[in-house]
Length: 154
Image (cartoon, rainbow, N blue to C red):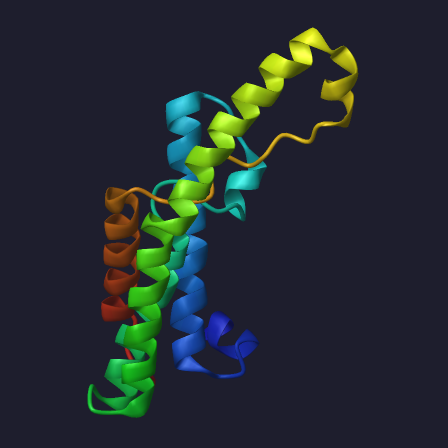
């Protein structure tokens, strides 16, 4: 953690947040590998999947802020609201975007079968951009756990 603190300008809150994000991304990559049997490097930085790195990041941020500044601080209020918005968005708009991408990809692929020139110009839309409630919850719990385990420096 001291190494992370040094590269994060000695900022405890930023260090905890980035550690939570990185941990979630590594977990996501390992879970994807276990389920698919293939290593997909894009999972190390890509959106979507289990657990939600966005949720881990924002939940660890609000809890680290609470530990460092207190729950009555403006910083805590701002980070708590930010966490709620990010997690709601991940389960709502971003998840729906992924579902729409699946439908569009399928429709365009079927159209391309009739006209092979279409498929050459078509860039497949990303389908894994949002999260299920379970993915958001698991990311939130991971971020909270990391923030609880990392002590505020003296």
